[in-house]
Amino acid sequence: MSKVKTIETSRLILQQSNIKDAAFFLELLNTTKWLLYIGDRNVHSFKDAEKYITERMLPQFNELGYGNYTVIRKTDGIKIGSCGLYNREGVDGVDIGFAFLPTYESLGYAFESAEALLNMGKNKLKLSKISALTTEENLQSQRLIEKLGLKFIKKIKIPNDNETLRLYTITF
Image 1 (cartoon, rainbow, N blue to C red):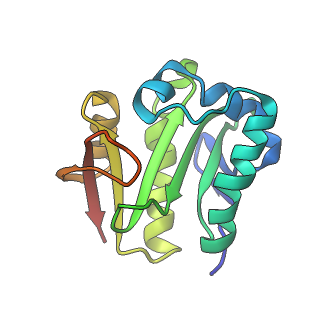
Image 2 (cartoon, rainbow, N blue to C red):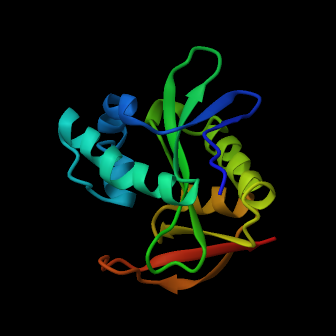
C-alpha cells in the first residue's frame, strides 16, 4: 500500500507525524479539551511524547500507510493541530479524529484538514467507509463531524474504555 506522507490544502500542510513533533504533542495532549474529551495519554514529558509517537503513531502508519498527521499552517509554519485516520479497536472501518491547540480552534482548520483526509481516504486509499467517535458532551466535534457528512449511527463502547461514545459513519 502506498503511503501518503503529506497532504496540502489551501491553508494547511498535513504532514505525517514524526519524532520531531514531540514538543508539539506534549503541548497538545495536555490541553484541557484533549484531557476532557479524549483522555489522559500519560504524556507528561518530552521523553513521554517521543515514546507516544514511536509506539502509538508510527507503527500504524508503517503498517497501513495512513495514520496521524501534524497540521501545519502554511503562512508561518506553526504546528496547530493533529488530524488522522486510525485503525481503532472496536470500530468497524477507519476512524477519523482531530484535535487543535485552543488558539487555532473555530477558524475552520479542523474542517479543512479533516475534509482533506476524507478525500484521501476515499480517492487514494479507496476506503468504502470512514467512522468518527466523540463523547456525548463534545458538541463542537459532533457539529464538525456532521458538517463533514458523517451520520450518527448509535452509541457504543470500545475496548478498554468505559465511556459511552457516539459513532458516526460515512460510506463512499
